[in-house]
Amino acid sequence: METFRVKTSSRTDLVDITGEVAKAVAGSGPRDGICVVYVPHTTAGITINENADPSVRHDIMSVLDGMVPWDGPYRHAEGNSAAHVKASLVGFTAVIPVEKGRLALGTWQGVYFCEFDGPRTRQVHVQLVT
Ligand code: ZN
Image 1 (tube, rainbow, N blue to C red):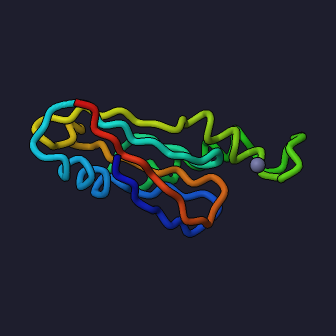
Image 2 (image 1 turned 120 degrees about the vertical axis):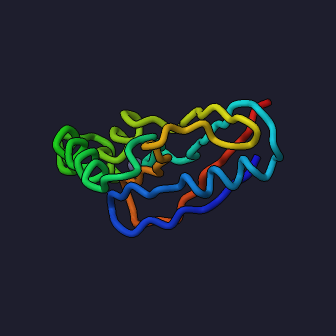
């Protein structure tokens, strides 16, 4: 398993980690399998979406903010329930087919680390299952 760090710069942030994931997978050689990208956190997640128009990233975060406002009738005393809820909505993993050591992503797909309670330094695990 490979692990790399992601430094986020604001409370909510979508960080393109496609390059890091591709590098971690390529390090295993030209093998076929599936790549599991996993975030070991409770207020951050992983998603795959468009890599061309940055407005898509903005819209995703904006819709999530609308669905799960930071201030709500929450019980969790830490005060970051919105981040926990958003992380569960997005999920903590992405599974990507790997062909000859390369991610089989679509042309317009990128892998994104989703920060919901930043800024922080986070970890991402990448494991190639062959
Ligand atoms: Zn919390």
